[in-house]
Image 1 (cartoon, helix red, strand yellow):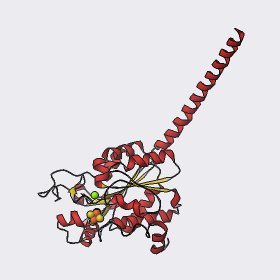
Image 2: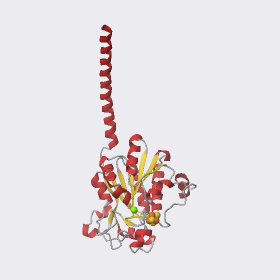
Image 3: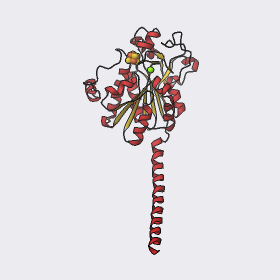
Image 4: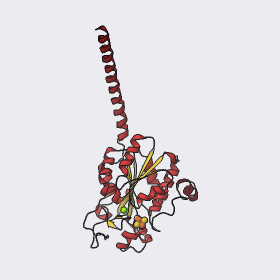
Length: 297
Ligand code: SF4
Ligand code: MG
């Protein structure tokens, strides 16, 4: 692993796009650091990495990175990423989304990308709020949490992103937190290596909106909340739902092998190509027969 200053020079557009739009103390930078370290550990050529994002605070991430990058429309990052992967399957395509981006406006794209098992890595920044647009509640805001659009408490039950991904068919699902940055490096690395639709849900803090509205005094307090609530999956599996309570498992939650969409697509291309060649041969011989008859007339 190279020293952090070398990683900054190697992977960030530090001389063009900095400073970031992120609030001082935001956890998004921790996830960016983990992602850089994971890619560096794998030794991937950055020219073969494509980073795609939608809109929101998390959606700004590709702007700062010196990979092939696409900053797309809200909720549609997975559709752009799918197109890139099918056109250029040799590229490593990573999709960065927020909780609103991936499970509200982009919710259908998310479940269908998982169902199709397209070989993409989705890193989801789950801060339980719409940060960039002013602190509205999102599909992952806990029941009763305060938001600018729920000053008396959120009345909706929240999505569990990792379980949603598992149920929709993702081959690899992991959950980490910004607090457990070292563990997050490994989870992102494993997700990048895994063939198929891989999801890393990262519990991260937005102190500016979620924290301020829900009585967290500082980003540090929110980081300690992540430390306190996270339970390693190995330990969580031995606990009853009552024992687990409002704590959540972290680590690799799902790791299974399912044929990817691209593998099937390649087979269809070969079979269809064969059928088309046969039809063309048949057409050619019909044409030849026609011209022979024409000449004999
Ligand atoms: Fe981070 Fe929240 Fe600020 Fe956005 S609004 S940069 S998520 S702290
Ligand atoms: Mg969010």
